Every structure is written in structure tokens, then in C-alpha cells.
Image (cartoon, rainbow, N blue to C red):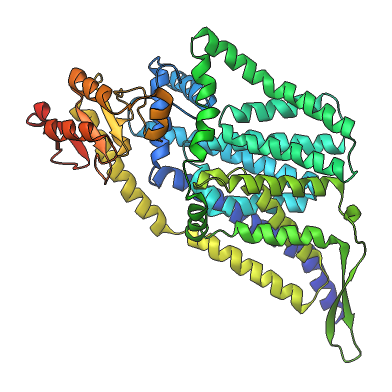
Length: 524
């Protein structure tokens, strides 16, 4: 009997943990492999064609903001331009897949710093589970693999947040500058990342109000951090000043985007729809993680009576905030302020900045449950969490989702190849919320080539940008293709609609393409 107990203890001590680690790594790499497969097989989002087109324009010698409209940061287009020069990509649909590979490097960076942040704040185990949970979230899988600046914006934001908490724990006068530099770089991938540093500053002043931080130290940090943020701002401002585009560089990233935010009165309705469509387990992470952090003041006790009945009891140890470490309290407020800010968004990618924080919270709760005393309640909680997570995981990890996405991607490729073979490199095209894969490697007709707010364009220019000026360009340039949405040209001014109806007809292969009557008889 004793030898059997010895063998059982030996197995539990040596083999069970190894099996658990292997299973954990298997699921983690399964998530990564699935993200890669999504990158190669999933349908392209319309935004991806937008960013690929901008990369092509930069490669062709056009300058962002000066020669064409764009309201995102400029760092990703510059990087794509460099990569294009190094690898010599051709103007084919495969180039989009190469751009997604670069996004996957951003995915790995985000996961690495999520692990490091969880490890620094709580424990290595929380860091590991945080990265694991993040890799399986549908929000993250769908958007982090796409061709968009949000991916690398998030990578630099989470890296800066990791360095911030390292500074918080081990004061160093040089670190605030490098923290600010990380966040400054994130800003010029995408200005949406400003909610992150703003949340950090707000959190620090909350701690000052709670007398947990020195006002002088916080001000010193903020000033040094601003120096880091201003470094890329000044360098890029100097470059665009030299190129004659300084005003456009700043206007289309800051004032324009603030105006655009409030052009979506239905943003909360869209947020609710997103939660429903995306099966957002991360909300559970938020609630459970925040609750477990605030309940650190409670001690969990298991009472075993003579009849071997087990009962739980809770006792509150303190009535103030002192039981929560300053770093955890700061992380809590950053989490709350960042979450509150991104709820203003109405697209899935807006939540990328928030997901690593929610995953760490979920991991923190999970590890606390693991470390709780053995009981029926603990087992029920673990089973519930496992079912919750794996239901999400296996809903996402299915071949049907890949197959359906691949069929849609092939249709996008067919349209792309049709337009490329039916037009010459100098044929200009006009796009109005239509089949965007068609225009990627062809010049566009107008400065405002992408409709992300006609009314805002009109307000900025003081005229109808898609009115008489557009008609004149359509006449002069003999625009070959017009790409339209399911609503057709109904979003355009009446005179423009009448001109297009008179001079363009639906293409015989792709009805969402309008082809000029002069060329329609020559189309295959």
C-alpha cells in the first residue's frame, strides 16, 4: 500500500505537471497556427485593401496627406514602402498575404508583452495564462492578423505599459522618456492609441488624490514621458514641413478624427451588436478579474464539520484601499479608463488596445481560483471557466469558418484579377463604398479617394467634393471603372448620380463595377 502511494505521489509530482504544461503549449500553439491560417485563408476586410492601396501609392512615389487623403498614422505606410523596396513584391493578390505576415509579427509582439506585463504585475503564471487567453479571443484573432495600423499601435502601447510598470516598481529617471517614446511611436501608427497614455496619466492623478503617489513624482514622470512622445512628433513634423504637407499631416490625424467620432450617433448600438456577434468572453474576463482584485480584502476559509460537511466563509480584512498594492490599483484604473474610452468606438479593431488588459484580468481570476483551497465550489468554478473558454475556442477553431472565408477571398481575388487584366496601369478609378479589392494597384481619381464621411469632406473644403468637381474629373480623365456598393451611387449628389447613370453601365461580369460606355464594348 505504501509503495502504491509512493508511486502515485511520484506520478503527481513529476508527470502530471509535465502533461499539463504540454497540453497548455499544445492549445497555445493551436491558437497561433489558427491565426496564421486565418491570415492565409480568411476574407479580406475592406480596411485592408485601403491600407494596401496606401502602401502601393507610397511605393509609387506619392506622399501621404499631401497627395491623397488618409486619416490614420503614417508609420505603417512608410514601413510597407521600405518592405516593398527590399522584397520587390509584384502587383499581385499574393502581396496582401505578405502584408498579413508582417501583422503576424505584431501578434507575436503583443502576446510577448502581454505575458511580460502579467508576470510583472502578478506572477509568471498570470502572464502565461493572459497570453494564452488573448490568443484565443475572437476579437483578437480576427483583427490582429489584418493589414491595419491598429496591430502595431497595440504592440507599442502594451510594450510601453510594460516598461511603465517596471518603472513604477523600480524608479529610474531615464525610463519615463523611453516609455513616452514607445507611446509616441504608437500614436503615429494610429492616433486611437492616445486613450492608453491618457488613461495612465488619469490613473496616476487618481493615486495622487488617494495619497498613494507623490504629486511631484507624477509630474516628473509626465514631463519626461512627454519628451519621449514629442520626439517622433517633432521628427515627422520636420519631414512633412520639408515636403510641404505639415498642415495636412496634423489636421487629418487629430481634428478630422475627433469630428469623425461624433458622426456615429449609433456607436453604442453598434457596440452592443459587436458583443453579440463576436461572442465576447472578454467581458467575463473583465467582470471576474476586476471582482477578484477588489475581493483581495476578503479571506477565503473552508470549514469542515465533524460530519465532514464542507462550508465556505468570507471575512473582510480592511475597509479601505490599502490592501491592494499600488501597482494593481494603478492597473485597475488604467483598465477602467481605457475600457471606457474604447467603448466610443464602433468597430472590432477599436478594442485591440483593451484586450491584453482584459486577458490579464481573466488570467488573474483563473489563477486565484487555481490557488484556492480544494473544494466542490472550486471544481465547479474551474469547470465553468473551462466550458466558457473552450466553447469560444472551438466555435472559432472550425474548418467551416476557414473554408467560408477562403471562398470569399477567392471571389475577391477574381474581381481583383479581372480589373487588373481589363485596365492599364494609368487607368484611374473612382471608388464609392464598393468592391474595394478592385482598385488596390491602380491610381484613384480624386484626393478624397475613400468615402469615410462625405459631409465632413464638404465641411472641410466648403463645397461638395463629389459634386461638379468630380463630374469634371470624370469627363477629363475618362475614368474606366467606378466601384459602387449595394446602395449604388445613392450616396453621391444628385447631379453626379445623373452623370454616372448617363455615361456608365454595369459590367457584364461584375455588376458592382460600373464601366464607362466608351469602353464597355471592348471589355471581354
